Length: 360
Image (cartoon, rainbow, N blue to C red; front, side):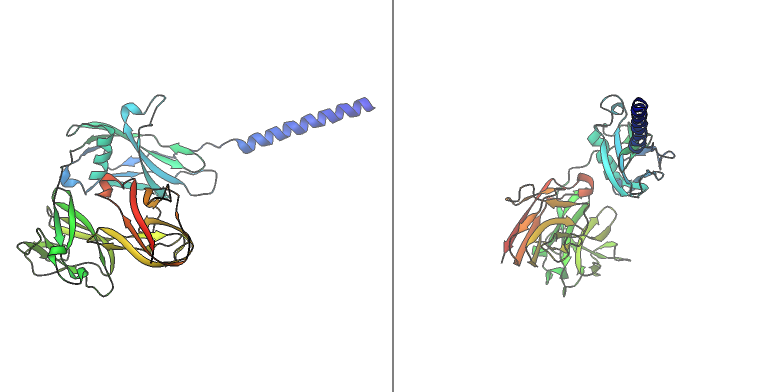
């Protein structure tokens, strides 16, 4: 009898172990995930020129990808040369553009696609082949089938010069010390301005630091008319990126502000405290009451572009670095942030910037 009991015990153990292995296999097996249909592009043949650098030239769209886990899916685009998309090193040299969570399309303007094409090595003013695919990521990454594009890139002109922006934001209309907007392309200028409370939003645009030639508003606020006495007007108080195109005689202003973020300032990690742009020193500044805690910098109250110190003992801050400065004691601090950003849409944001944090 004892012999039979031992045999039954061994048989039961084997069945239990077999069942456990089967359950474990079921739990650890990844279910297949793929794009349910092909991605699409607005055009497969694109000729890029400097005149259309700001135009929308490519729209990539894709279907929603469903993962077995109920969580947000993050999408990105990858561009590469046809010859670099196979073999052991496939797609390792690809240019990647983060799109975001639950976003199913991405539009590129001419200068963005041109930079990708040139960086990947397509010859200037000659048709070349690029491939684009979509990456979907959650607990793993899956990729769409690629689409081949025929792209003709252009050589960006080396540009110099600046125009000037005398206006009420100064407190006085003084063209001698007015904000300067440096050239970022042929006939295109870009810079930043802050309208403080109590200061007016109106201004002119001058080609020199004098009144020999200037531009004012035309039929609309965005129209530029030579020697017009009608003032341009910014949207109101706050900080803006101002872009002027002498080729089209149009200008625009977009809300734009660097800010401090972290547990040392009022908004914590959720809301930045915006800084003001000092046009004379080309520096972002703020004087604020801070408490003990962390501090770093980000753009437009978003984590898309942010800087933190790789080494908190220095004034150098690094793009997308998770580090932060430690504010050791509460008090009033003057904080400055300076960045050499020249046409970041085309060139990207620099890897480093500088800052100062001084207790008053």
